[in-house]
Amino acid sequence: METGGNSLPSGPDGLKRRVIYFYDPEVGNYYYGQGHPMKPHRIRMTHALLAHYGLLQQMQVMKPLPARDKDLSRFHADDYVAFLRGITPDTQQDQLRALKRFNVGEDCPVFDGLYSFCQTYAGGSVGGAVKLNHGSDIAVNWAGGLHHAKKCEASGFCYVNDIVLAILELLKHYERVLYVDIDIHHGDGVEEAFYTTDRVMTVSFHKFGDYFPGTGDIRDIGYGKGKYYSLNVPLDDGIDDESYQSLFKPIIGKVMEVFRPGAVVLQCGADSLSGDRLGCFNLSIKGHAECVRFMRSFNVPLLLLGGGGYTIRNVARCWCYETGVALGVEIDDKMPHHEYYEYFGPDYTLHVAPSNMENKNSRQLLDEIRSKLLDNLSKLRHAPSVQFQERPPDAELPEADEDQDDADERWDPDSDMDIDNPKHQDEAFRKPVSISIQNTRIKREIIESELKDQEDHKGAIEHVKGIDMVTEDNSCLKVSDMSIEEPATVKVEPESSTKLPDQPLPGQLKS
Image 1 (cartoon, rainbow, N blue to C red):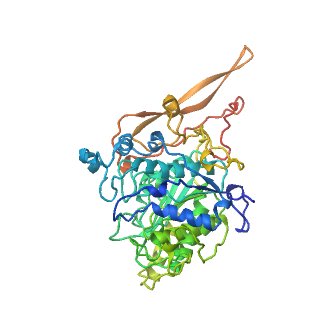
Image 2 (spheres, helix red, strand yellow):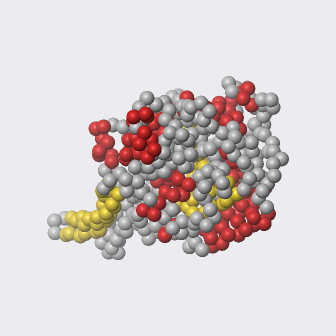
Image 3 (cartoon, one colour):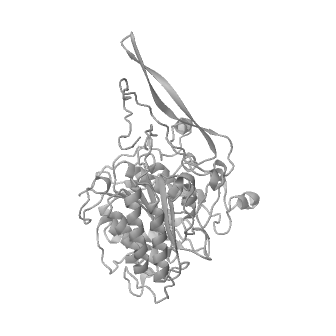
């Protein structure tokens, strides 16, 4: 199979991509509760369609390793993670103050296996980022994409923000990461996390007005170094494929030209489809998937995540079709027989026609939005550079053994996403981390190391030893308090500089 993504030169988009697909068979067993619109069962339905369409054989299928406490704490507050780990339906009545503090209870209920569910979907997204860092072209985790979760509270059916965690992993390897959100709801949790940095650009297409979460005004553009690196595309009810693409393609095309990301994360929330239980847009599955096709055409490493979607038969249809788009395979409209076949009656087809609902997005409104956002993009300097830095080590994930039948055993026991090992946990926690969005005080230490040449020659070079993280407390940060520190500069002496063994400076970074 021909490989794509970061190894593929520009050319015909029909070329195959190396696609990694993350799926845990247990994910469909989690249940938010009677009457709750979020149903993890949709992930199992999607997987069944992929299997019967023959798409699983064309991807590397991996079971995600559960994210550990320390993995989640790279973004989330320690006390919030501890709360999620300990809360159960039986104990929640004894923790009413904590439930209120962390916004858990109504939209985000306590259910059996809540923490395991969070570990599973977050593990898939971070695992996908690791695979992209190691040369894969596209990684897929339909269980992920829960974009509303904040540093220390749940929101909008989301408990852990797997997207932020995945982007932090990508930033170990790539100078710049682009986040694009086509869920009908504003991607507020991700935008907030990266609102003050120019290393992550967030672009959200969403319903704006009297609609959850109420954020995402076109005037919200980022702050400080992040000014103009947040783009919001506010839309009204009934937007159709043509209107949507009249904004998506020119805006994203300009973003790719100006920002030049090393990797892209695309949140494919399916509640923007026509007929969604909670949505009010009028996109077809092909119109929704056109966003995936367009992002794929740039041949940049791509992480595809799920998100919203509450008419679950249409969610499964959409994400199955978009997996085919990722693979460069067009699949039949006639649905194969499988265990959930009766969900898709009476037509038993993959695609559904959009409705005749009114499109409240006038041509004038769309033109004004496009003009405003393209103007914002014109104010950016091209491709912000990043200083030389000593990068934290990538999580180690080996290539899968093609002769190994059990995909569940394909993970490296030394991976960053491994199961907790109390003996080594403190040691692992002390690994240098270049980016942290926690309530921490970060200090830089420049250490002079002597290099001996025989016994009578001494020289010195300066290098960055890492970044010590000194945690002062676990209280939550306001948006304005959250920042991403710039990597420390490495001073290179023209005459006596020496490359440290096994630690080459990342050649792709600019000083």
